[in-house]
Length: 316
Image (cartoon, rainbow, N blue to C red; front, side):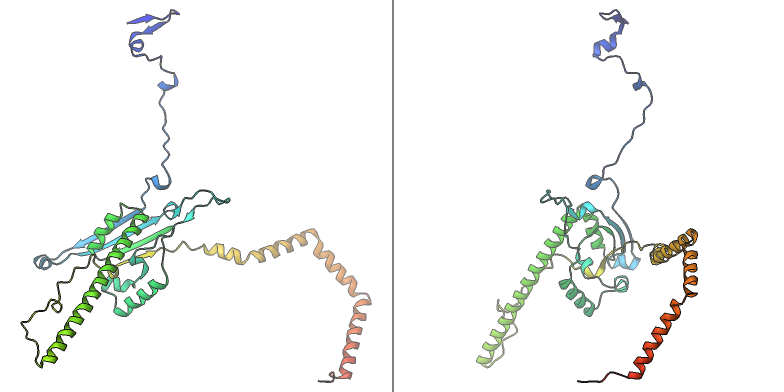
């Protein structure tokens, strides 16, 4: 059922009741939606993919052994993750470079053979520790490969996939501080134990008898050592930066032969313009004159005079 407006045109009662005007003509045609994905930190693009393989044997399950696991991850670090946006100052518009250190498995890198087969030897660990103290590696834009044979490291890796590089660096610093505090506590406890044993031994020597085995001294009896706050998984994981793509060999050849191409092009141009032929005619005309013979005569005369005089006298 329809009614009429003030101008006498029919108006649909449903549209009039809802307050909607007549639909536009182009809204009735099928439309095409163009969706542009966000870039930067809001981009839905995947930046890391991991593949994990674990296996367990019948005997290992009976003896409650840890499963045999291998994890491989490929990570791409974008520019916005390693750059810190700052306000423009003194005409500087480029963002500052954020220096986030790599995790321990990216600092002291063991050989791939030791990662695949077994633990790194002590000499390798000492060399890696010394290199880590001298040279600190930081996250940079590009691709990274992460490989581990520890299921604990894999679980931690899955948790860190929910955090940014900055949060990962904060987590690594927290673990490092806790581990250093634990090591200092262990060293202090060891010093107290050694001093207590030395004091008890001196008292036993003064009395002329050894202390009984059943005697207990709170300073001598070693208390239960606190557990390590975080397991050391550095020797079981490795983080490597994928080198950038090498330039094309044809591009290198073109750069090497660029001067040759320029010389050949210039030679071809002079030949086509006739400059080479004109230069050859000038040389031939000059050779038929007396000037080349006069020049050769002068040179030979001066050489003969120099030879007759001999070497100059040494007055020194």
